[in-house]
Image 1 (cartoon, rainbow, N blue to C red):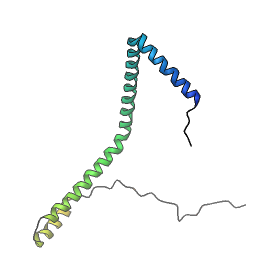
Image 2: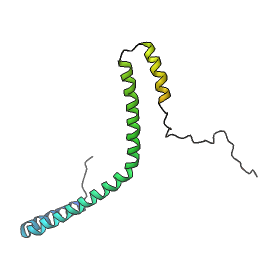
Image 3: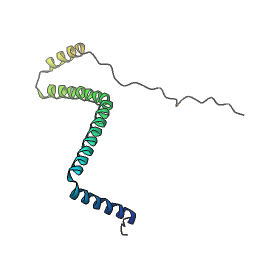
Image 4: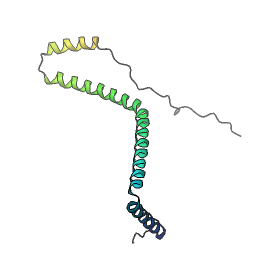
Length: 125
């Protein structure tokens, strides 16, 4: 199948092209000023939208970056401790003291109670 363009669209595009060429030949300063205004308005709209979407996403991305840092720190601690050769007695001694010194951070996850086991109270007629 051939993709045909609507004749109405072709006429509008042709008239727009002719109008652009006429304006370019007769009043190039006006055309330049209008294009500059359009570019400035579009830039302002772009930066305003980008600013507000960045603020809205900022809270989520900061939580994500905090979790990523914690995960990276946890995995780097594991890799560093396994890469060094230590005696068994010092490893046991260090593990006991390190667990006592470290405080476990509160989890950011919460449990939501479900209703799977509960029956619905319905009035039967």
